[in-house]
Length: 268
Ligand SMILES: Nc1ncnc2c1ncn2[C@@H]1O[C@H](COP(=O)(O)OP(=O)(O)OP(=O)(O)O)[C@@H](O)[C@H]1O
Ligand SMILES: [Mg+2]
Image (tube, rainbow, N blue to C red):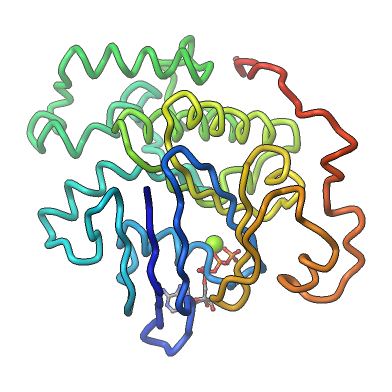
């Protein structure tokens, strides 16, 4: 379980990016975080693993106060928080397999990783994960030869090989086409369900969030503006979060459409 208590971040510039955000995310829950640009979504995700240091408030993961950890403790804790970025952040000249294995860096130690000597059990797990995300045939390809969707799958496998307790995902579909976006969201949500893994996913596409997650939290100017089920999303809620607009085409009418349950097709 992840608890955020009155989490507040004021940047040195004076920007109040987060103000008193209190949230409890139970084990296994996948949550989408929406809100306008600048609302504090990335800041929230980064305060959870302290890539950004919160100004006040606390982050508690399974009873451990992350905000109170020293640098050694924080390093260990970060292994338990898998992070997936919008810009994929792969090492371009390394292969798919090496990129996935780099997720083990926090475990194998500097020299072994420098010499790229990973234990066989890590290599086996990397193959299993690549198979699961549909990239087994691409294990030896270089990262710079992949499409955006394929790169995102590598990022997902790399985050999962850490065996995290929590996934932090910042705009996983921002530069993907609509079909690939669905495949990636579906893959992330299926993997979380398989592993009983909680996730916080920042996403701009409200309809896509509604399609796959069980809870949506809206941020506005650093404060919580909505917390509810995808079915509770409405024109009024979107106006509260984003301001006045005609929202009709933005919201998915959840009652009208069946959940899309097609299995993920490997992109080869
Ligand atoms: N390193 C920083 N230094 C100063 N201010 C920052 C920094 N990073 C973010 N901010 C400010 O904090 C606020 C929240 O930014 P954040 O990146 O968390 O928003 P966001 O919701 O992720 O936006 P987007 O949807 O555009 O990614 C903004 O006003 C931003 O200008
Ligand atoms: Mg952001």
